[in-house]
Amino acid sequence: MRAGVLLPMQFEFRQVLKGLVQRLGLMGVAFRVQEWLKSFELSFRRSERLSADDGLPVPPARLIVRVGGDTNARAFLLGGQQIAQTIREMLAADGADAAQMKSILDFGCGSGRVMRQWHALSDRVALHGTDYSRAAIQWCRRNLPFAAFGINRLEPPLDYATNSLDLVYAFSVFTHLSAKLQLAWIGELTRVTAPGGYLFITVHGENFRATLTADEQSTFDSGQLVVRHAGMAGSNLCAAFHPPRYVREILAEHLRIVDYAPARLGQDAILLQKPMPNA
Image (tube, rainbow, N blue to C red; front, side):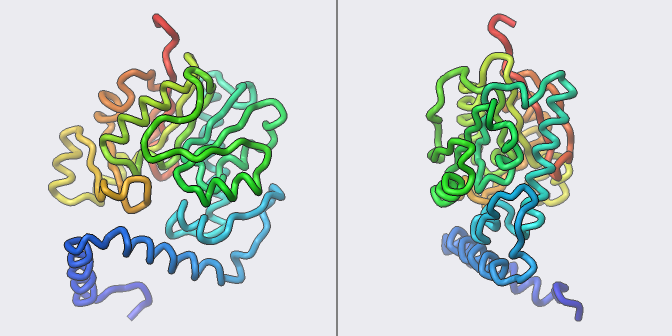
């Protein structure tokens, strides 16, 4: 039997075990144990002990796994490059340039896989990062001193003034929030974004529909948000799936949709703009 291929009996056993863990309320514990095991494996791979081309430190395995799940250091670094490039390209298509902005916020910055891509801008752009993980922020403060980092709670508010940021981006953040937190955070990110400023987010869109159960697909097709394990919001165990209708009519109701690129980064990449007063 090939490695990684499950026999029907093995698959059935895993499903039964998963159901038992859910009924016992231990999904959160099991997920954290799984993350720890992945981190342990990654930390001992000789090939993962690499240096980054940008000369900045590479985060430890536990922080890489927290951000990327089934990933490795090379993929972590490449992913940050691709996200930053997508943001640049989508801004450029609307006549904007991150290098010309006064302030940028990386919301849900983790251990800085995207933030490190703005290093060259730090002499003229105020760079900020915030995350729910104290460990990730402590690592960023020690290793990415060109930006200012803060710790946010699971719920708003952020410690930034209203209308103070030219660009706010949140990669794979709304994909891991409950329905209530989705609306709370889009409101808060809109608050801190300057009029005419941009907000970049990603969501699990149509290309994830096939991964949903029949009942979930029905909910998704009706234009409603689908959320799994809402009680673990803020972790990768919580997974939210966004039909385009929900994004357009609810999540981005008070924002201009500049660009909506399905599966641009695996997830749907969405560039929004905060309207000018009386626009």
